[in-house]
Every structure is written in C-alpha cells, then in structure tokens.
Image 1 (cartoon, rainbow, N blue to C red):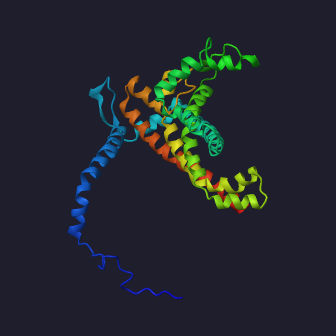
Image 2: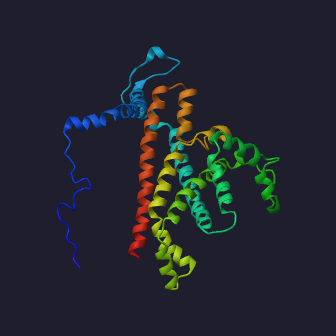
Image 3: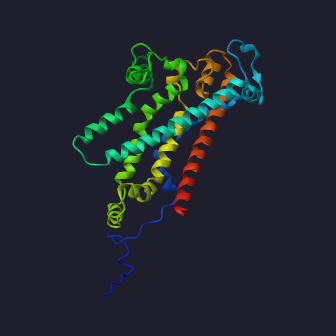
Length: 313
C-alpha cells in the first residue's frame, strides 16, 4: 500500500503555514535577550581588552610617574626572561603529565563503574568527591596529610618498600603537584568518559559478543572508537583548566624549590605582586591565553590523528 502525502497534510496541525517574520518582529523577539548578551560581553571581554591595553603600557606600581606607552617592549622582556621560559616548560610538563594520567585513570574507573555491582552509586559518589573539594582545601589536605615527611600518609604507605621520611614537596616538587592534580582531575575525566560508555549502542556490543570477541577486543575495537569525542572533550577541557593551576603551587611549593614548579599563572603572580610590574604581568597574561588555546588545539589534533590512524588500520 502506497501512502501519498498531500500538500495540506504536510502543513502543521493548525492548518496554517508558519508566517515569515519581519525584521521588526524579529527584533521584538530578540530584544529581551539583549541585556544578557551585553552583560556577557562586558564580563568576559572587557577584562581581556584591559589586559591587552596594559600589556602595551610601561607601568610599575612603585613608580607610577614613569607610566607610558611601551609598545611590544613588555613582550620582549617577558620572552627574554629565563624564568618565563622555565615557567613555560613547567606548564607544559605539568599539564601534559596531569592530563595523561587523569585520562588513563579516568577511562579505567569509568569502565569499572559501567559494570553493575552492589553499591555502585555509593562508589561513584565517593570517586567524584575529590573533584568537589575546593582547590585550596585540596592543596592543604595533600600538603599536611599526604606529603608531610613525618606523619604523611604517602610515606606511611610506601614504608614497606623502604621509603621513609621523604620530603615530597622539597625533593620531588613537580611529581607532588602532578599527583595532587591527578587525584583532583581524574573524577572529571571519569564522568565524561562514563557518559560516553553509557550512551554506546548495546546492539554493537551484542554483535561483537556474538562474533566471538572477548572483553578486551570488544573494548579496543568497538567501545574505544565510540569514546573518541568524549575523550577529546575531556582532554580539551582538562588542558584548559590545568594550564591555569595556581592554588596547589602557591600553597604547597611556592613555585619552588627555586623555580622548579613555577608555571605561567604563578609567574604572573610573581610579576604582579612581588615585582609590581603590571605591564609585564599583563603581557604574560595575554601569552597565557594564547598558550592555552594553542595547547588545547594541539591536544585535540593529536588525539584526532590517533583515532584517524586507528580507523585506517
């Protein structure tokens, strides 16, 4: 039996075709949204524009009478600063290490939580908890409860392996920061990957099972490719947020020893509140924004290329 659709049947139930709005009517509909749009632009763009303006100014809070236009001199001094280059390297190492460890652990935990077992909701809530702790509170918790050389839990846990009274914050500062950030950001990665696991098609899993694929092959060839967009999103958001890390570095290591854990945000803090060089700090802030965009795009391209190679194979 062939069902034909008449033009009248294609119309809405009301029997009236949608009327084309005039430009005035469109503005009447969009008008109530304009205050929110203006507020969003003011809150997000004006501070950035002010930062760009100060980056071209020679301004030191201790010498306000010497203020003036500096052109790209602030950018030149920032790029020529050895501490800035060290901060860039530390930021890359810190971000890459934390994102890599967090996404690997997040995928592993998400796969476990995707299985049905007694008390799964309780376990899921407990695993999410680290991400809900305020960054400053988490940094103090790890500084005093985990890294303390006398009564820290980390030394106690490693004591059966001959590790005793290690001052983690002083002897292994970067490792300490990466461990603390991995603990805090793994739940974030886990939640995004878990959303991807729970949205995958059960028919594909059943088909793979009927074809004789084991759990590992099913995950690698069926589940993992379907998680591509979720993993990309987790890496993208994680990279953007972790590049801006400040609290644990300020509270645990103070950027040291020396400049061992000074990243770009802490470098800006030092320029602003210790050297009072507002112009150089603003120039470094603009560079951080650009670096954040570059790192996020680079991470996204790397992951996308890996998946494309996997699809070709």
